[in-house]
Length: 278
Image (tube, rainbow, N blue to C red; front, top):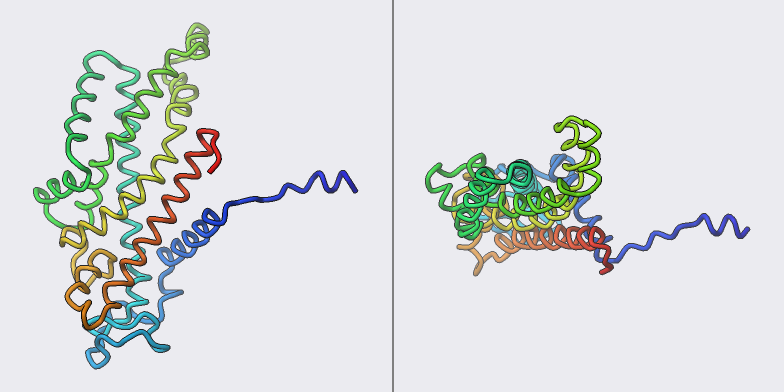
């Protein structure tokens, strides 16, 4: 009996982390399969039922064109998450590549990459993204590129510092004396340790990217009407808050809950990496 009891490992997850994981799971399902959860077509206008308050027929109410807000919030998760995740993937790929090159090459190349990152870091992420979109024009693709480029330095600096330390560690020097090819040495020994902290940083950065996506879409720099996207929905509903508060509140609630859930997951991941407990 004692042996059986000793095999039971209790799963003790903080309530906040558990709720965040549950919310992100539902959100992922909504983004991947919005048709399963949305009761109506998010683009279907019904002027007769415009700005209807939340009811059993329309759980979150309708907007100024009579479109079901619940359906638009669900479909909006697809665009908001797609843009944010794609921007983070671009930032991680570019940051890891630049950081790895700078940490291994050193010298002139390291100096050039470092000065370039300093220039990018001199601007706040949102301002830099706004400047880039001003040159390239609004749109989903340009928004992804702008947010991704603005987030590259945070990953490049971490990977560069870790690469510099790992490449000069004892076991790497020993592997080099055994005649291991440089590309194999980098792929097997340097890269896994250099990017160990990147997933936690990317999770935390995803929350910032979601806010940036919503903010730039609110300014008209992202997806264009009649696309169902949270930031764009906020922009469309701001003029009706006095008469129909639900048109702007629910997209804001969706953004807030998503950022809180992502940041909660990222903080616990980073604490686990650092050996701390929250």
